[in-house]
Image (cartoon, rainbow, N blue to C red):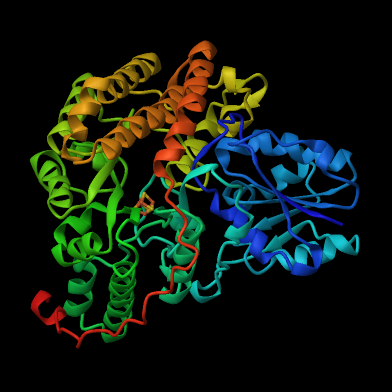
Length: 516
Ligand code: SF4
């Protein structure tokens, strides 16, 4: 009996941008007695069904975007007499769908780190359960990824998780519901061990693939102090201290290492944190800006973000502290108007963000927005190709609408066209080259241009374009650019790299008293 792990994808590029971490975490969670799992990442190449034999166990991880591809794989797995086991965020939310449409023998809800070994053993004795609940594993029990199974020269960035969960509650995001609002931090030693292993094999660019790298804000500390909630205050201080410890240890790693993470904009109000990020070589952060207007932020329950001139100033603060921003913006919010698109493009340029993504508001299962939409649609159901629009991921891709909510003043096509136009302008060669001006070396500047182009081809056209010719042209371009890009990111391996020395915390600073 062999164990297979498959990351489904409709598009394969030959080279991936970031390692799909879950594949290698579940590989680590697979008991050695079953041998090395056979890993397929379809963002690199298509899965070959002939590699699966009767009795094998096949783990398929799905999110809403690749559920349909995952179900097609699951049905083939079942046809071959093997066990199809689904996991991931979408399977957690819709286990019955994977059982019905994906040929699943089992669905794992929640984290797979600890329960995966039981699932394989149950399949081995031909007694798989329909569902398993992996729950929310504590940070100290997260499995480290098995990077020794990573194919060579196939990814630009590796990914290491340091914390799961996010205390916020944005209406378009499911993270706080599925991963929980309590931050679950890994131990610093576990994170550093993995990063050192990755540098030994030649990765110097690492994505800290966290839900929110800044789980405790200064406002959280101030409020807990004002409420005299000592227990809460101490918990928050402990989480914050661990963040600083992690960053101090990252700073001891080879100077050529570069990290990237996701963070909320509130970190701009915390210069001590930003300086620690710079010292740790965390040079880039995805910041969910969402909207440049206060009305737009209200639409998505993200009023803790700044808007207008304050927004530009906050984003610039990241840059002043050496952290370059990938700004994430949403279009199609009810309060958006035609002028919002230009205002967003202008704000992104003024704020000097290094990269940006412009996504169209899409209802994601597990979110507040989705639940509201589903309730609204119950009164006036719309079907496309016989499928309710609230199961939009099951609609054939060519028939899927680009916008699911009727906008009060613009047609869906207008929102799509204006969104596409902002992508086109932001990623025109002229603007990319101008943005790359802060980079000293020509090689690094070239890498910046290439990664900008590849980012746009992989995520803009394939997600927004309506005509299939443009989608396939973009995928072809991305394939073409990916290989040289991967070479630019690779570094000579450092097989003898030692772990940095244990860190000693500085004497505690009573900072909260000054905040309350
Ligand atoms: S969008 Fe970001 S800040 Fe908001 S809940 Fe999701 S992870 Fe947290």
